[in-house]
Amino acid sequence: MAPDGSRLGAWGSPPVHGHTVALQVGGRDVGALEMARRNPADTYTEADVRLLAAMAAQVAVLVRALELTQALQAQRDRVVAATRTCPIRILDRLREFCEWHGADHVPAGRRSRESS
Image 1 (tube, rainbow, N blue to C red):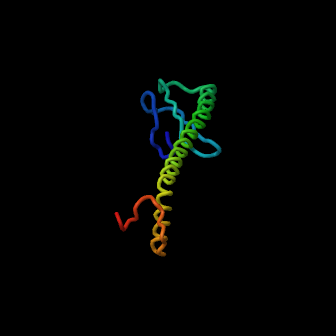
Image 2: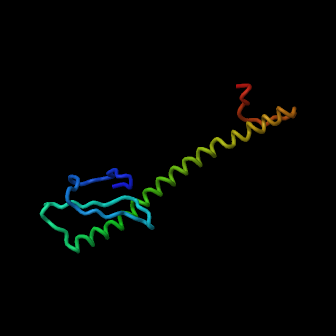
Image 3: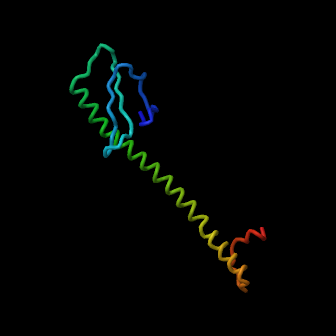
């Protein structure tokens, strides 16, 4: 379960009677791990709770790694997009500057906006 309460994944039916462990990495909540009882009359042993806590620690690291991977991919996409358009913008500005100041040589490249 995500911090906003949305269910990220499930196996079986949602727990009515169960145990929930917070998923935390570095003190930051990244979700919750819920375990449902197979039978409402069953109880969790101390070993069950320890196992769930151990699993939750590993799942929390995985969830955080996925968050960081998605953020890194989004940042990479922004950088790639910016580097594709940046040289064109610089040439346009240089051309505008040269035209404004009456320079004899205007850098080649994309045509200025006025002549498009």
